[in-house]
Image 1 (cartoon, rainbow, N blue to C red):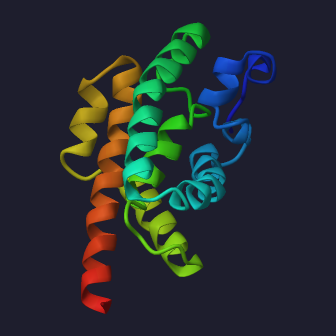
Image 2 (cartoon, rainbow, N blue to C red):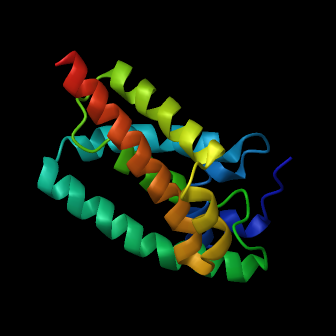
Length: 158
């Protein structure tokens, strides 16, 4: 069971790294973090592709610092409640995907599957890259894998 530190509710850096508090869930914090990313994706998707890509890139860069700082503060590498990486991974999954509940659900499922299974090269990256970049990078790769599958489905289904 996930044990979130009290600092999540006092420290704005920890609050963001814990996905606006969603990572404080005692059960399945990564799934809860991804779920919390869905409404934010909906808002991001309204901005147009260029702005969406730029904001996702900014969220990734900020996430390296947020996750690294929170990890150091807590003294735990990649604490289960740090879910900013799930936010960014989901947003990568959903690049150029129609704003529709079925695509949001497919993206959610695919991203969670790749994030949990960690197929090559995700698992080796997760084990070898440390700090904030390491926390972010495995979810970015899971998002890329999920995005490729979603884009393939979009191509097939027209």
